[in-house]
Length: 183
Image (tube, rainbow, N blue to C red; front, side, top):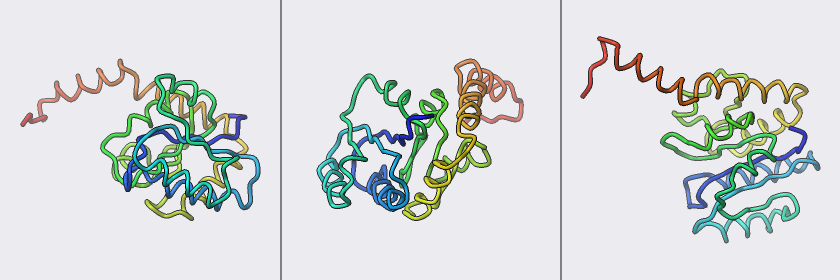
């Protein structure tokens, strides 16, 4: 929580994960904040374009693209806030990983995030593909006085709603519900 570091994780592919949106939003955010940094962890065909964008924004000291790693846990542990900037997603497992590490979430308001994360006190949804909406949420979250409490709430939600046991219990309820029709 004290690291003042945003984290994003995913494949660097064009028009999917929205890392271009994130970099542009961070550039706006950085105009009024000199402390926070951004790590993007992943590899893919969009890497060179993203590095060029970082250079064009003169943010090489504040935004780092880290290579894919099997030790992703160390990045989650070193971050303060997780950002999902995707233009679209199925179910983003990175959200579950971030919550398991107690990271507050900033996410695009795509359907899966609205369904799973809306009205949670540890999640801040922004208008999908809107650089300024994302920047505003970055500013809001970075200035929270109770970021530690927000982190605890994220972890508790993960523990009670996303653990193996809680997921098994949810499946049992679904499968035992006589109104459930299997196709």
